[in-house]
Image (spheres, rainbow, N blue to C red):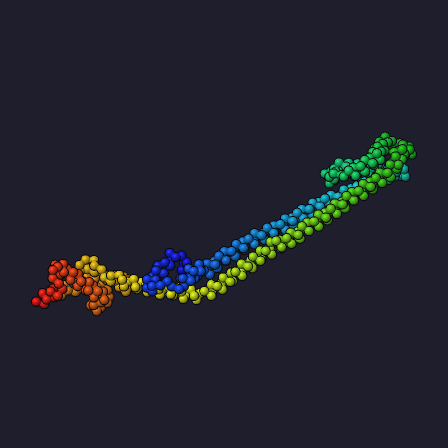
Length: 393
C-alpha cells in the first residue's frame, strides 16, 4: 500500500509531469480536498484503535462494577456472620438465665425434701444435690453479670439488665446465705435424731421459701429483657440487610444507567463507524487499483522518456564502451582488430549468437564519432567536404 506523503510520491508525480506536461487529475483532486486516495484505510485503522480503546474502557468499568457489587456482598456476609455469632451467644445467655429460675426452685425443693424423708441415704443424696445445685447456681449468676468463658457468657449486659440484676441481688444473697447455713447445720447435726436436724434447718428453709418467689420473678424479668434485646438485634440486622440490598440494587441501577448504557452506546457508534469505514474501503478499492495502475504506467513512461535524453552509450576508454540495455543495465563493448578489420565485440548473449547486436551498433556509432572528432582535431583548417575529397583522392 503506497504512502500519502509527498516525498514518497514526488518522483512519480515529477515523472508524470515530465512526460505528459501536466499534473494528473487524481493528484489535483487529492491536493484540493486534502485527502489521500487511500484515506479510508487510514480512517479504518484509527477507528480500530478507538474500538480497542472502548473495549478496554468497558472492561475497566465492568471490573469496577463487579468489584462494587462484590464488596457489598462481602459486607452483607460479614454482617450476617457477626449476627449469627451474636444470636448464638444470645441463645446461650437466655438458656442459662432461664436455667437460673429452675435452679432456684430445685435448690429449695431439695432442701425441703429433708423434712419428708428419714432414710439416711436419701437424706445424704438430697444434701449433695443442694450443694451441687448451689455451686452451679452461684457460678451461673456470677457469669451472667461478669462473664464466664467456660459457660460462654460475655458479661456485656445492657444497663437495663444490670439494673434488673441489682434488684434481685438481695434475694439472691439471702438464698445463698440460707443455703450455706442449711449445709452447715446438717454437717454439725450428723448423728443427731432426724427430728432435731429438721428443727435446726427449719429457719434456713423458711428463708429459702420467702426469698425464692421474688428471685423467680426477677429472673423472669431478666430473661424477658434478654429476649427483647436479642429480638431488637435481629430487627436491626433485618434493617441492615435491607439497606445493603437497597444499596446493591441502586449500585446496579446506577451502573446500568451511568456505565453500561453510555459504554454500549459508544461501542455501537464505534462499530457503526467501523462498518462505514469498511464500506468506504471497499468502495475505493477499485479506484485505488486504477490509480495505482495509472501511477505505474506514468512511472514507466517517465522512465522511458528519461532514458531517451540520457546518453545511450558512454566511453570508458577509446575502444572500450558501455552501452545501456533495455532493462537499464550496461553491457561492455570493446574494439578488436582481426586481419586488419575492426570489430566491436559485446558481452551480451545476442552478440554471441548473431555476432551483432544493438549494443555493438551503438558503440560503433560512438566509435565513429570519436574517430571523426580525432580527425577534425588533427586537420582543423579543412572543412568536411575537403576532408572527404582528400579521402577520395
